[in-house]
Each structure stands twice: as C-alpha cells, then as structure tokens.
Image (cartoon, rainbow, N blue to C red; front, side, top):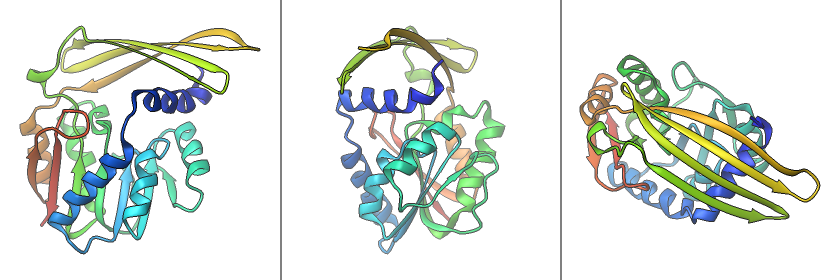
Length: 237
C-alpha cells in the first residue's frame, strides 16, 4: 500500500463526492452553541487531513487538532500552518488543556475494538472539556442499521491523476470489515493498484450513551447527521 500518497487520494475521492465539509462544520458549530452559547475553543480529534478543522477555524476563536496517522497529519500541517496539530491516539492522549468543544467526526470512534476501548476513548475526549463543554461524536452504523455486502465505487481526476476506488463491506463478529481497492493512473507512473482494509466496530446506541455517561457527560442522540448515521452530543457535567 502506498501510505504516503493515501491522504491526497483520500481527499480527492471525497472532493469528487462533493462532501460538504463547510456545511457539516457549520452544523456542528450550531449544535455546540445551542448547548454552550459562549463556546470559543474547539479540539478536533482524528482530524485527518484537516478539512473539517479548516472550517472550524473560521467558526471558533481557537482550534486544535489531534491525529494518529503521521501521513494525514503532515498534509493537515501543510493545509493549516497556523493551527496547533498534535500526533496522538484517542485512547491515551493528554494535551494538558481543555476546550469548550471536542469533536470526533467521520466515525473515527468506531476504530475502537470493543466497548472497553470505547469507554477509554470517550473518557479521554471528555477529559479535554471544560465543565459544561460539548462533546460531538459521529458514530459508525448501529448493528441493526448496517447493510452487509455494501459495495461503493468512486472515480476522481485532478492534475493529471485519475483514481478509481471500489469497496466491499461485510460483518465479522461485531466488526465491519471494509476492503478498499484503488487504481491510480498517471502519465509517467502508469497504472498502480493498492488496497486498504478497515475494521470498524458496530457499537450499539446504548454502548455510546453508556460511554458518555461514564465519562461524566449527559448524552443526546440526533438522527441524520453528516452521513446519515446520526450525531451524539455529550454535555460535560
């Protein structure tokens, strides 16, 4: 797998899908300020290459990001040179400061392998909130809503590079196993193929709510959300 170029390809695919990062960030900001009208600071956990964070930076006085992947973080730093960005794992990171809001978008929380890890990660996120601060988590599918065998396909062309992405998802135990294949075509390099396999845990709504309560947050679940999987809000006690 071509790890170094995956972040750029990832961004290409979602640009081709027309993902509305600006609209999603604005929607999250509205939810945060409904619960905490004076919110001025935000931490984006698992910020990836920074597309949500770029818009959060326009909506809050101070923003920061944390990302585990060094390749994703490198692209985020090029995109957002004035935003503090830190390499960290949501299970054990500690920035030593708190924020009015903490976000974890794009179902990144589902990379936790079981309910124990979910509890630990949500506790770490809540630890970075001020009292009355707002935690925003975009979940993966609940078990009863996931469609086994789901197939997706996309193509994108930019600056002399064409990418085709196809994926197939199935259930293994409590996990979604998503196998993703990429074809990348460029004039000098020709055509290359690589794969990426993702595992996402199918946590229940009750497991998310339990983790939020255990972390000292009052949970609310909102249907819909950016990708149809809903949004969890947790207001820290």
